[in-house]
Length: 561
Image 1 (cartoon, rainbow, N blue to C red):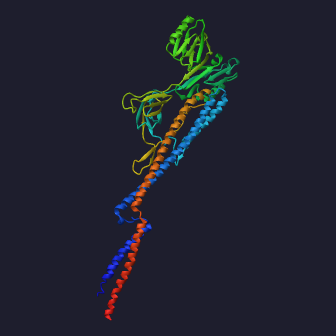
Image 2 (image 1 turned 90 degrees about the horizontal axis):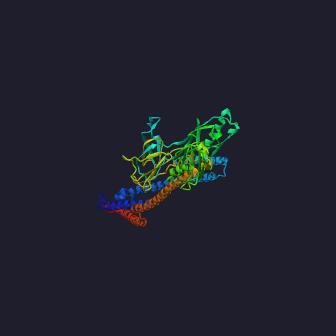
Image 3 (image 1 turned 60 degrees about the vertical axis):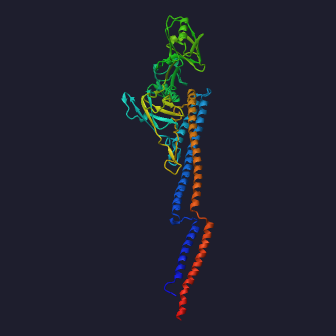
């Protein structure tokens, strides 16, 4: 028997250590709930599990990103809902103001509310924010840039051209590109020069009367001085959306819809004013009855601004009627039995007489009034026929005021504002939108675009309900504005539906990946408990056997006694 080497104890101790290590690992799995706690447990599996942890964390964050995007859309849509309500209120006011039962004072009160509502629309546009990000002022719209070649002012070339034009709005069907438009004539405002001369310093009783500026009546009263009359004209200009400075009326608005018409109640009042263009006798109605007298008179009669008939001093009534019918052939205007009328019954015919003698030659119903009238002009533009212009061959260009609109197939619609003659290059980019990261990899984003909502985009810049005519014109612009807001809200609704669908898809993906991770790294507690019990029993057995093995050398003492 040997005492220096207790082989039995060594063997028992080896197995006890091995069993104890396995028991410790089992206890770790039971206490952590994971069967993968260290790389030695399963190096390949733990690498897969860690990648899945990263994926799950990223997926969870993309879900929060999507919900943040939904919150952005809901914030913007809530503001647009209020703008929608304000537009409907403005249209209601315009309909009210267009009714002839309202006085000028009534319409002024209407205009004050309209002005306040327009200011509130601007405030909502500029101050609606999500965090520190403004939503409706164009900050989240696609960026576009303008350059103009050939623009001049007072004969000198304009070097800084970026402010000469802008893309007011564009649909999502407009791809990023450079689009070229050639402007050959800029839009103009309506202008009338009107000078006031009051003999004796104040208006006499014989010269009193009224002048009507568009539909706003200005009373010229006995005793009015030149300064008093000009003050009244300034007030009237404000009502019709125009300015009066240095003897010139200028409308705020550009284009064919911009009009200034000054009508004098009698010749004495007319003699107090000089106008450019010169005041003429005019009558405008759906039908104009014109009785031709036999009195000889020389001059011209103009129908609808472009049909001019010259009448000689010796022309007979029959000759004049024959000249009129010949000139009006295939023009959309007829003259029969002494009556002028348009072929389209909804349009008015306008008759202008060259002078009072010519007016007296035609006794008209309704009566002709002496007036001066000026209109603005729409911009004249086209798509260049050479070079790369960005637009397709099927694109169609239209103009309105100082705006150019190009439409094409597949919902392509692009509205641009231009101010000078020249060749405009509008660069439309994909930049400026809000990227919502709804995937865990690079490039998995949704570009959230909120179109600019301002007075220009809404066509509300020149809306003025101070007059009956202004209220009627406002209805067209308000319909455009309501349609624009509806389009923007529709796009936001589509974004919200898409984001909510993405969030639901993300939730399903997170659930699936989490389940897969659980199957890889989570411990089966029932199975592990069985293993733990086995190791626990083996450990106890190992301790008992080791104790007995350590007792074996004591037998040697019996041999030494």
